[in-house]
Image 1 (cartoon, rainbow, N blue to C red):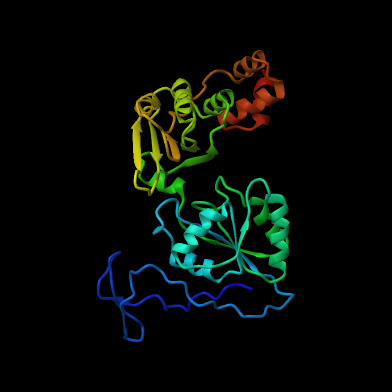
Image 2: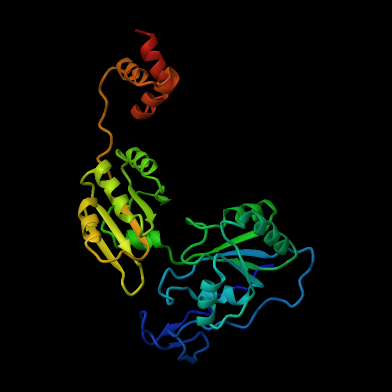
Length: 327
């Protein structure tokens, strides 16, 4: 069973004052509504008291604020107030959000360490007709957060999964970074070990997309060290504590940002690290055979060398083979 959506036109009308600071509006019936622009109230539950045992519930993927509690949609508040239970990473964190909006719903702990077991339990609840909302501690669930197994199992069981869009640290950071946003790649958190981090960064040397990562405060200095070493003077923007009181954006090269952070008495907060585009791999104008032989000399198998050269030149592996064998 899905929650009842507001009727079309029930939240529209000609407002006396337009924009985010509007305080009243005229509804479709001609009455003045002075509640416009105030924090969203949780509407009365629209679910039926009894649910057919053969009818499955709905799983709602609900985005929540990444810092500022005002960054939540009316729809998200309504759904959280109407579902039967809410699955969340940290019940204490989610309870603070729910208390702020006067919502009192049962919470189920759902995190990396119990995801497999809890996913099965939640799917059984959904199959029994219960509506469930999945939230993370902050932002959009599943984006570098648990939830994939639950969504996968729910869809496999034929259960409706509905996203309730909202805050995302990735998009918030990118939108204000000043870096190109026409193409970007999100990698989650950087690897914890330096060797793995550097290997990943080397694979991005020729990337023509902006790269986006999360990083923890206790690793941000060494991560910026690695970015400086591998990518040199590539433009970097680091966003810290997005939407919170001490929000800031640091722009420059990785080494300059590293030195700025290192000079502080303490480094706190959550970081979103964005790396500007590379120049792209220059066209290799050598004969195909020469390019293949160089890769083989570096230890690559002949077939893998064919694949690599084909990919880099935008041709098929068969074309590489023909160019070599016909000589």
